[in-house]
Length: 113
Image (cartoon, rainbow, N blue to C red; front, side, top):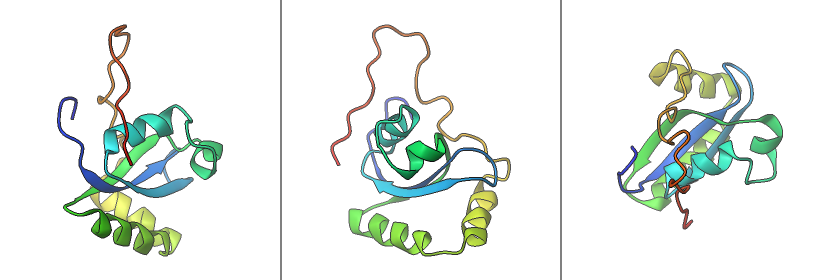
């Protein structure tokens, strides 16, 4: 995903398998994941250390992503865990290779939403 254009997405961050999860939406997933990893946002995801991207879904329109986010936030915990495990059974960090390591010229992605 390194040089690709931003896209609108609903996503789930976690701190580890079967533990705390955070559901959100953004029009720039790469930038949002960077902010979660660096603790930019105060609140639940920062307090719980939700830095692993374990699930996301692309959307054509922002309104669709918002609708999906609200729907998932209303789900029972077991349903959210099943959603993650259906697409990512090992709870791998889907953004593990999105950000370069030890590159002095690299700057974090900008987020406009």
